[in-house]
Image (cartoon, rainbow, N blue to C red; front, side):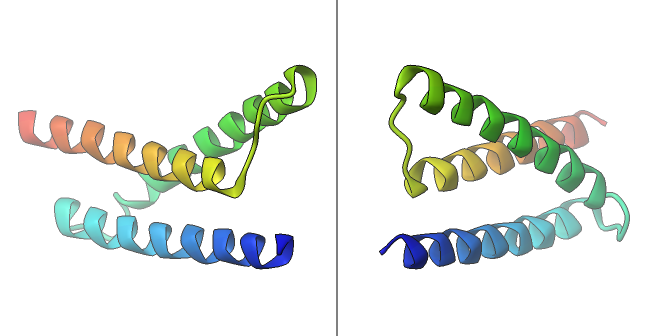
Length: 90
């Protein structure tokens, strides 16, 4: 069961990255511009994973595969909205 959940998480991560990359290519119309948001979201994801792991370890915070998928989706969505807002104001 745990192995299939991890495989599902990896597949979801890949699909999310590809989808966001396509959206960013369409928004920025550039090959280089979408890479910067992906790097920042990746770093944010690593930091948030560390915080959640700390909470799970120290305070018995509940952790599931859904939590990781949800965090990734929220990070990509937030980053996309932020960059889209900046793009609209220019």
